[in-house]
Length: 504
Image: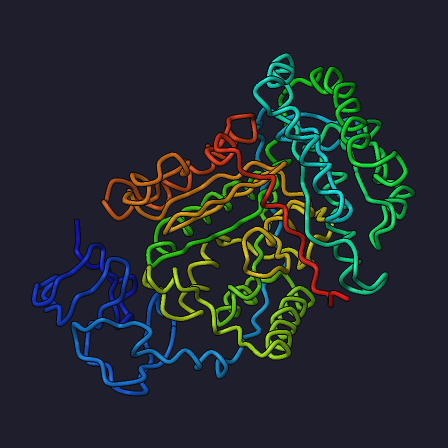
């Protein structure tokens, strides 16, 4: 295995494939100081003020003189260059997607939507009803009561999705509207056969405001307030009784042949390292291209994590309106971060830096790689109901639980999540496929990872090979195969709606 990788002929840095000790040689390069695995090495003398180039893209400016063979990282890179990069506005023309017939084993709902899972959900309107919701769900997971669910093999489970908001916010405006939009997306999600919607009764986000919504037409949709039914214990018992009545009906569903164009995946990355943009992310991008060629949907998000490299996505927008919409999102985040006395360039996180990522541009290059090569068909706000096919962009923070929550509310029936350092994440009701950037991570956390992309570094497979494997995994999981995060019980605590609102 090579000790270093130069990703592009124009790059002036290489990546350490393993920990490199001082004074060893790699590809005729003498290592001047210890270089951790995944970190960058100078391939030539780089003077103060010179650009640092990786993947033929400027990721920062040298903040001091760097000698050939030295470690290149946050101590000698200035990332403020991102504020000086001009956005290119080359726009793609419209392109017809190539639809190819392929099927998976999905669940057809009465309204024509297609599900990848068959859950019964308990959703709260406000934090105050969280304890009731969790107690109802836990009734069916306790040892004495697990036998109840074992009778219903076609039901994936009973999950409680609770949150910390719903009251002490304005009754109008962005915050409450975004919360309502997110919850509405879950209430109509096809992966739920039936739903209990539980409120306290006096909250700002009152459940009555949802009941006239024509999208809440599930015949097994039940809603009630704790205050109106006599308190906690009665509210818990009502929920248990309702679910017992739903279960026999939910168990009648059968998986059947469904077109792959009904698969809608949300793209996520977390705990990224210096290899994420070389292995897992581009491999997922190749799988995304295959899915889109079959007519499916892929949702790219995490707006702060495209910053500094957004021109790559703007150049892939199908028309001027789509490009303008994306530019406006980036500008909003600049103002939002400034208003909150921070800067978008403060990203990457501590763990990202430990893994070898030095600047937001470098991180963004890797994050964008998971979107593949297709044109962006449309740009959506957080938790918008997405009807399109192909590649789209949905606005969200870079925090994975918030971002994935918005994607599922938008209709994603599956999540693909790349990680370089490991991530304790899963999602419900949409299953989450985890992809590791290295074999080391795969070996250490095999119980959490579904696909190992580290074989690319070992020369065993290439990006196309791994992309095809990931696509086949997507089809299998959409057909009912359990992911590692599902087996580990993730999904309920990771429901985190984005509510950018003052709490009063």
